[in-house]
Length: 119
Image 1 (cartoon, rainbow, N blue to C red):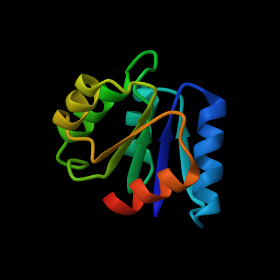
Image 2: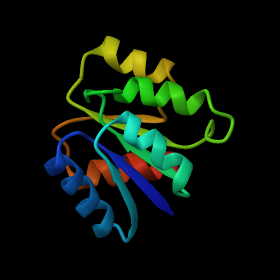
Image 3: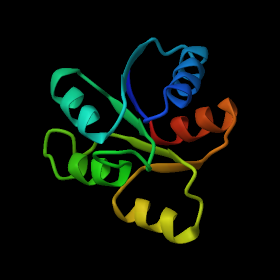
């Protein structure tokens, strides 16, 4: 299974990547924003996207909508990992059809639980 980890913070990408490796996943691709992530979806054989919301160029919500609007990726699992914890933010993300939502900071156990729920 190949994961695309999308966050404008290299530190946060490293935290997620290290957690995924700890769960036994080794096939990982990274992107610094939604535009880069969308480009990688067309060149890499990605199975699941883990994305931040707040990023330059194209944010995670816009990325989610772009993925859901593309017949090639419409059913791809998307996990949003963000600092945006307001109820209206969570509702907006779920309306855009993210499969699950994690508010930062989080533990690897929470990440694993949320991933198992969508995979």
